[in-house]
Amino acid sequence: MSYVLDSSVLLSGKDLLLDDMYCTPEVLREVRSKGPTVQLMSMIETKVEVRSPSEEAMAKVSELAGKTGDVKRLSPTDIGVLALAVDLQATILTDDYSIQNVADEMGLAYRGLSFPNIQKKIEWGYRCKGCGRHFDEWKKECPVCGSEIRTTPKTISRISSASSDKNE
Ligand SMILES: [Zn+2]
Image: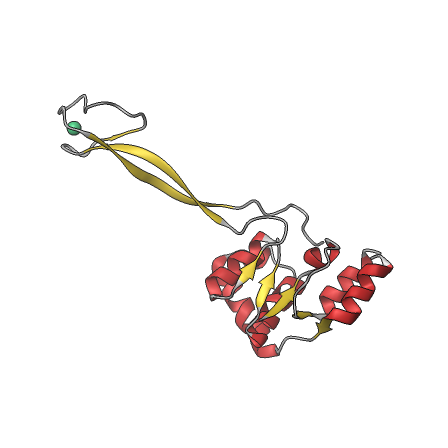
């Protein structure tokens, strides 16, 4: 299994015990600009292989990010991370919600480091079995027709606990 790391994951300073780790030259430049520790740089130099994504993959990711509307929230570095994952068929390690969202759309595997991945949040509502009226509060029986009330999922929305620690 190969992994593509973004700069927030590298800058977390966690010693990642994974075999095939990759990042892009832009990610490495971002990490360097943040004044990393000697330990972090030596971890990266010994364990993380730096590779540029193909132009083809860059174009593919940019196009899709444009469709999902995430392109405004993605930096060129973020797009590079996604594109390299396309090239290598790798899992992306990122805590960035927009990267995770586009990865999801593209069917790419991803994992968060400090936060759980995007989760689906379900809000429950109540609905009469007889007349089909919806209620926000649970009732023993329908005030209109007297039928049984059932619990149904009202809305399913996505929540993200992704960090606000966005790169530039
Ligand atoms: Zn009813």
